[in-house]
Length: 231
Image (cartoon, rainbow, N blue to C red; front, side, top):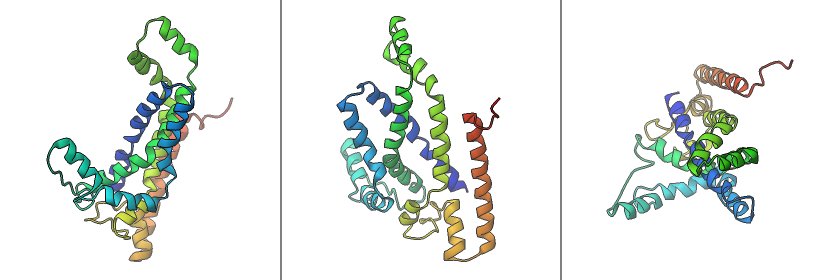
């Protein structure tokens, strides 16, 4: 459960990253340039989970991995970080991968929210002499609260149902290797349902997961206002 919560919190970093990227694309206007970058940034989202894992096993390798090579070039000396073999770093390593695959989706949702803001507000800001930073801080962010709430809830629910990539990174095992550092609640349920059958433990894990998702869904309904009866 601790691993599940930590990975869910780590995954939320993709929301502000997607918003910043969407803000840059929004400034380009609705032309062919923006359309090109929308497609390019969204491409990783349509790649299958197995393909992404195979790719990032090479990217996150301790010796000769692309990420460590890039960090070595920046630092000016050899960097050898065990992203996938050190139990203290594995969560960060798989979060890097999830950010790469999820930033395009978050960018599109944030971009849609930005484009839904009435142009009259921007025009009024220009007349009042607002600069780009003030427009971003006082107009864009306050008008994006609904979008942020949607992405927050859906990202958390998605994190709690995360399985395939963590299972493959653990060597096709639900134990969350190394050292159970990647075992989430869903993997725990799978382990005690199929790998080491203990149906009492797996049923208990399923009920805990059900209650958590139920609470998150209730919060989502409250935030979006769907729980209020129509007058």
